[in-house]
Image (cartoon, rainbow, N blue to C red):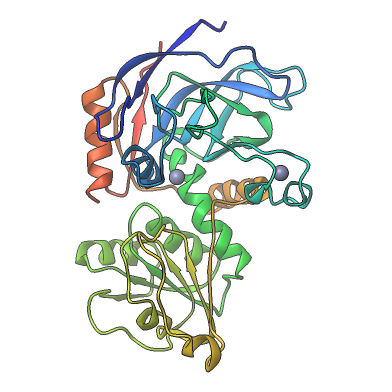
Length: 349
Ligand SMILES: [Zn+2]
Ligand SMILES: [Zn+2]
């Protein structure tokens, strides 16, 4: 049963480390909602952006975590998932259900009120409370919770819920398939999954990363060619280039890696506005676009595809039991030292 408070690790002000907190629970369970006991939660770079204040002010305390695998401990009367089910929850925990995007199976682009898993905006005041996976339980609309298919390991599946969806959605939407050449820029939490999904979809994959060991890793994941992202870039070698890094890049130079009419797609969040020459857009009819998570239908297809092709994220495991362990995981993700994703495990009980 629900208690009045939840144990959580949260940040009380920007720049502070996370600390053990007791936070109010989410109140009465909505008819469409699930309450999920968190078993595993991995750390996404978006958590670091939120904690560091890169994306503006958010409500405090901030309890991060949006790559969650857990067990349903309570289900609302109209929820289509029952108590006891093992489910995953990603970045999105709800949507309005009535806008054009929601009515056309693009809930991730909802214009009527997207709900994020791990925080609410600081305004309007008072902020609504919504805790991420660093709390012992999370609350979400059941339409945004996904029963894990057979064959997916519970703990290592956690990063699929955000990172996996984030790369699978544009690969599928932009037609990655046999005969297509896909470049992946950055072999990290997102990039290593992009290499695996693109290869499993049949595309030939070129991985770009300045780190030799990460390029070697990509070879084992299905990349057929490797390129040092710091050296001279090859020209016209891919049809689709997925950019998973956050670093500012020479966008005009990277557009030259595309063949005629190719597409560069951002999935990492660049830290600065894009500046690029219009020439490749005109003379070579190239495209530049971006992609954010994916729809609920895409999430289901991604999870089924990962299970069928035995695509499991490469993870380190750590404990979701102490502030020291949680802060160490955040620091390693912030500094790019995670290999490739860190999953925090909550001890049972
Ligand atoms: Zn994320
Ligand atoms: Zn909507």
